[in-house]
Length: 222
Image (cartoon, rainbow, N blue to C red):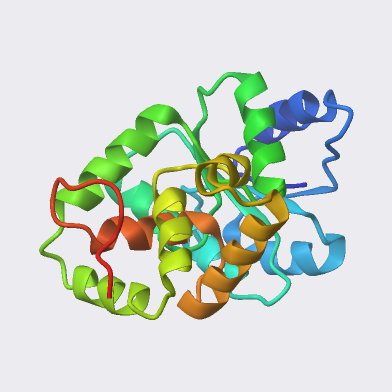
């Protein structure tokens, strides 16, 4: 794991906390978003824990640049600020999780494990606000684009996408649709390829973009 934060004390505290977990290893640190590309190339972490507010390049720009790489690690954004704009920009940039710095240590560790395994993780209060904010902005031109993209999917793929949009895990999707976890993973991989996205959080955002304001559930069918 790579820690990215301009506060040396924060990095030290996170490093001590995360190193206590047997299955997590901090392989390096960076103090600014501009240092992330070089650090990832040299250290090849599986997960980057990224602050938002940094002086030269902020975490949102660094996340977008990093996730554009073909071999990009997962990114968990961590910040003291949970504004709707920050949450959505981070997730649209490709972050697999969004946590507040006052999140309990056990939840931070759990989030990193989940994101490393390809499952999204956000503080529950942030997730609720993000979904509400997306629903309220339904008049945004993104709705038409989202619906056009979802129209490319088969009915089965749309069912899986809808459940991803509700925050279901692979195991939960499998139980709901009577599919094996391996089959669900294959569906999610196809969704990412067809929709040109890089993680399941972005699938969830696309599903919510496609809905009518205030609606919930399955996206419109083609």
